[in-house]
Length: 114
Image 1: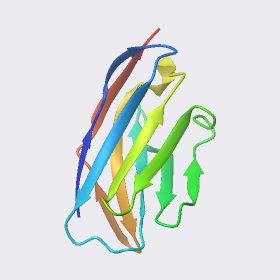
Image 2 (image 1 turned 135 degrees about the vertical axis):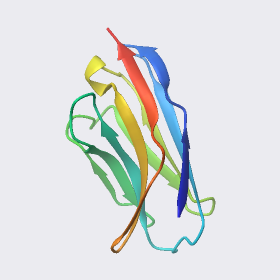
Image 3 (image 1 turned 30 degrees about the vertical axis):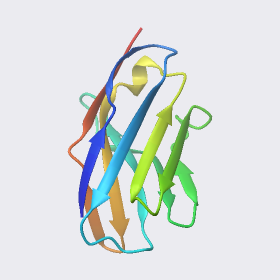
């Protein structure tokens, strides 16, 4: 599975950004898609994921500010990020999960200035 992400950029604290990711290739009808991020000098961490059935999982640090959504017919997943904080600055990766299969997108940079 190949993943193409877009939508990163530079924004001031309190602002909003929307990330988008499109999957292509051999995609199973039941899967998990979502987003991880890697802040500068830190390990990669969960942001939010959503199953094809609509179940979501959010990191505590983004609950109430970020919303993950997907279009199963188009194999896309989006991340709406509101009330952004400088600590949200990171390289954001789209992810596809199916059993033991994990595919990562190329990463898109989000920088939040204070």
